Image 1 (cartoon, helix red, strand yellow):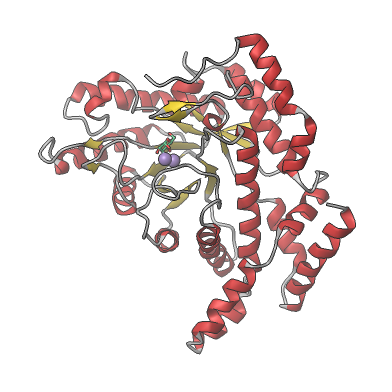
Image 2 (cartoon, rainbow, N blue to C red):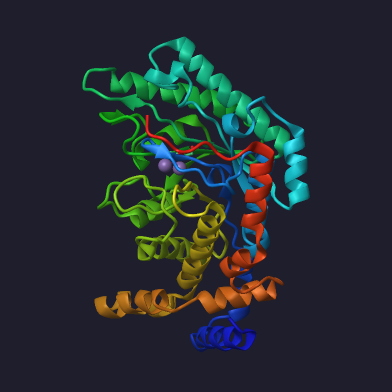
Length: 413
Ligand code: AFD
Ligand code: MN
Ligand code: MN
């Protein structure tokens, strides 16, 4: 995209903001300070329960993951931190070299994700397990994760539990609820000042009869039971198809209990597709609730914007650039909503007029504006094109294959 074209189209959007009586410089500043964390696991080969399809350029080591995350940050300017998964990224426990490598690469460690869902002992659950010894092991792993977070300077402990049951009668639901409250309280008490506990919910999978932390209400109650630094984490893929996610977000904001997001998209279930690939309007409405509250309060909310995706088919880094760029573009659209006009229409029960203020913002093409913001940050306007032109993927595919051998052919058992 030629600079002048980007400027003209971006300029028209900024002129409209001025015409609406708002400050375009404030809008640009907000877009430059937008930050979204990428997950280490989004750069490595993963798969579905039906198999893994390997990519030669996929990250093989923690340093590869940090290099790939740094590439996304270098091109988009909005991804300074990387969420880590404790057992996958620190198999031998805390490693100060990881923090140093991250810094050298130009990123920092973000949320710490303990893993209490893969070890054999967690077959019947972790915090919810009826066996106190298994619960102890899970709690200890989370305490170790808190210590790891302290060591790498992380300020977020991001908890997702696969716990639940597959059949009616398998275990007592109320007892499991109490076990969770007890375990979370102990972990919360061990957190250093400044660390936030994020309690993530998910309606089902891998448990198929009941999941212990299945919806926002359960996560809210458990976060409240855990302590004052616990909040709810909303994974956009963790809702039944008809659920109004922006309503959940609005309620959590109003209760000061919205800790953050795991952004992804889905057609059917927890598909972890790239953000906005299926329903961008829903993500816009979520950002609209956030920006509305921020404008009312006159300050940014302290919300952790994080990605949770790991794809089989798309090249990993291209998928990540798509997701974070879409988040940036949709956030820009939410900033464009003329809320004075919206409130005026609402005050008159002008249903169409109110809706049209949202539609006007949503249908504004903000790609030129994001391109202009990137150029102001000294970056290429089109991050995906810049990545494709960089030869990064071919280079790391060659280096990683030379170093580790080609990934084994995906095969069905
Ligand atoms: C899976 C879970 C959940 C969790 C993520 C990382 O569904 O979203 O946050 O793995 O552990 O996607
Ligand atoms: Mn998640
Ligand atoms: Mn998920």
